[in-house]
Image (cartoon, rainbow, N blue to C red; front, side):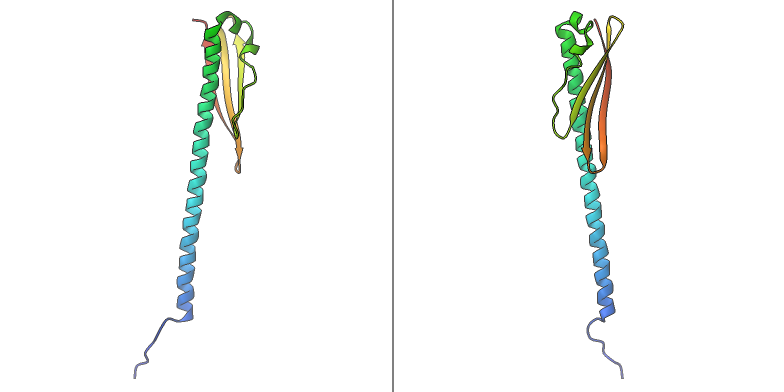
Length: 126
């Protein structure tokens, strides 16, 4: 006579539960990493845009008064406003009589450390 087996054994239930838990944990991990990467990419893009704005403001300063711009680099180095969570900085260095090197930096800090986006250009009298 054959024995009929009704239901599942406790071991089978625990094994199925373990598989479900592992799959759920994997999905949560992948989602968390995706969100972190998307946030970093967004911040990197914003930082690059802010650094580009700093360079554009230096270009506007040059265009508004070329003589003053190329004789006093402190005009270009004026402190800039920061946009949380970013800290913005522009450093200008006069090279010769008609060239200004401009380094624009946007930095920010998140749970994974400090990050920055730097852009560099040279402005000349034209």
